[in-house]
Image 1 (cartoon, one colour):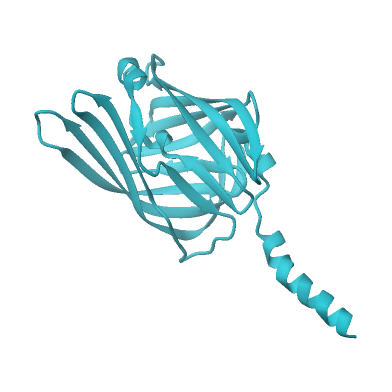
Image 2: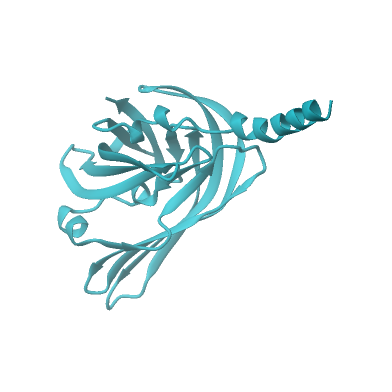
Length: 224
């Protein structure tokens, strides 16, 4: 009887953990050679640009899967822009998105010179419910000669649960609201900044599939 009670107690301990893990293998961002296209739209719903993310390499270490991502930017006229290298990570209990996906369109020359610092990953826990608060992050990109762009995300909160459909598929998502501050510094001019209220839709084990900002929106429109 005592042994049975101990076994039952053990099941109660491990069951919640198993129920709220993310299947990292589902994410296209963690599939070698996968290509994810993210289309950006302006306030009128017209295409304003896009990003094509190509998974270059995937590796696992100490329970965390990490993928190296090539991020190619394109203008609304489909002209190639800057190319950045980012990372996505998943441990089963957390998914981390590289904040480089939040940067504005960059000229090729600026992207080539860019150096990054700060806590440049946004964490998405596997267990979320409406009202939960999430950790933010900060990414600083400098291109030399006193020029820098800072992206700060804060006041992240789980606002609800929605089904989201794009041309790439349909996902059950957590709706997350947050504030995003973009700061621009170019010597000798004073720093300029803007803060807006944004929302993203995160599919557990997949990644962010849609965002809405005060300037427009983004959505995953193709996965290959």
